Image (cartoon, rainbow, N blue to C red; front, side, top):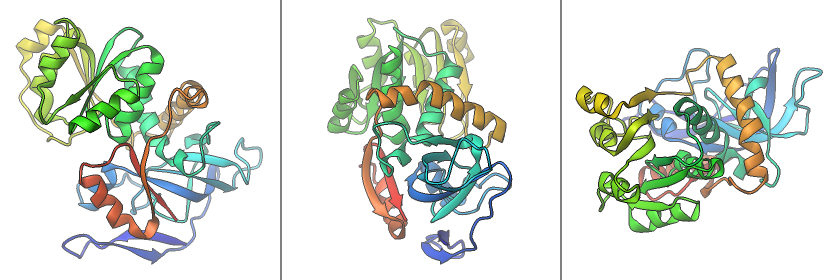
Length: 323
């Protein structure tokens, strides 16, 4: 089969197509012919050598795919010919992949095979984080990076749950597009103070939950934006790993700071999250309340172009690669 290989010896870590032995399916695994693979910031970090795959995972990129089942265990709920999506620890930039059966879901009703590849990583990240942060109806949720792959999903799922959403994005047009997904307010973080806007919109109360992909650069400001009893959920480190935490502000807010990741979780935990997504998020998708947002679809051979597009800051939603 073909994979996208990163040339570690090249200064720019160029990506090229390479032949690789066919994956071998083991017990409890599903062999999938890939229809499309999602492109994520984690892929960009791994390509740069800053996010190594967990032990046992393929060393080429790709954390989510859609595709067609080629083989599965006898008696499995997944049968050859089924259209599915899968959450991966790696290996999605390829023609085929094997994945534990617990990390596979049917393509939800009303969604095409290719566009479905935009869903698994974002849906699993959002749902597991919302459960940890206890997002509930009527609460105010601040979503940073509302125009990204996770952000566009987070806005829609939160609205479907009955939460009220404020979303930040870079530029007035991208901020405005977040409101078309259901956010009540879009904030252009390049020109507006998101803390001031949150306080204004919530009549001075603050956000009950902040979903943050930025990390260190936003820590202090996120605490300022929180309501009393608020929860800050950090799921990304785009703005750095280390920052000083003002414990006085934390105590005064009676706030919670929590962090969560998805890729490095044990298979059993991933399977539980995938099952919960199938139970709770897939009906939202089938009802049209949550939709995959796809910015562009490119051939697998143009993976470098897809990464450049993601790095440009112009993407709204997800970029997909098709073998």
